[in-house]
Length: 319
Image (cartoon, rainbow, N blue to C red; front, side, top):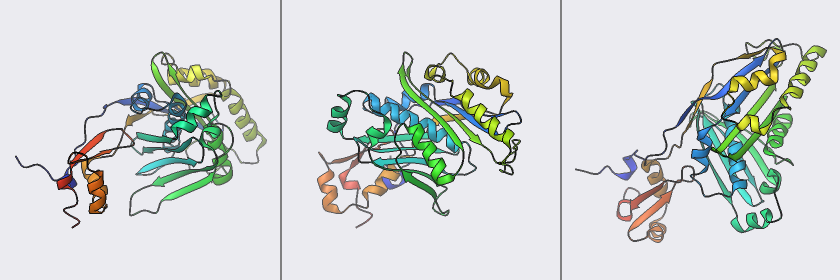
């Protein structure tokens, strides 16, 4: 049997084949200019977060990021990936999460272990303290033949929810309310997002919308925010409460209409061929230094899977 060359091998080790059928529940509120999405990762959060050896504070931040990109991506019409990237000078130096148009999620976070431990020794830290000063970017990538759309703002003080709302206020100039939560529950890690958007007249949706200067529209928006603010983390993370029940509890007085739910799944896109292509860009001396006992091992930062390449098989095609 002839082995497939690494640069042609699309195989990857098994990872959990887990799909959450109702991971995202879109809805809109009666005749109000308000639409929303309730994101609940369920067991998917635990499967993804526990693959990485992160401190709980980093896992909480990562779970929130996953719920956020899932909720925002579901509101877009695109083919490709929607990514959140946060880069700062705090103990958590990098956070990246993305979601494809099909609902496939992945993430990774980088942290300075010593600085993070020193910070957490003083007590719980808010998200902006973990990240420090830097930027937050949202990117829509539809492939090499399409120009990427990207928006970037400075990291705002407070929570990741605050940062997301700051982005929409300053970059998109779009009224958006975001509530994110992630925690370790008796059933494992759970993560959730509740996102509301105010839709302008002629906003390109089938949802009824009132004029921007209409006092009734502003009142409807403020009422929706007041009701949404009453939701608790326990409700958002509870496996016992269905999305339909949570939405009804919060917005029953505004006649919520639920749209078709969307699935979420673990969706790392690494492969032997992809990582082999990265290795082929290194000089021969660098490849020699990377080899241990004749093999080069690369670990995918998104799914934490190790890929082993015989040194003798790498670099032959770039010679």
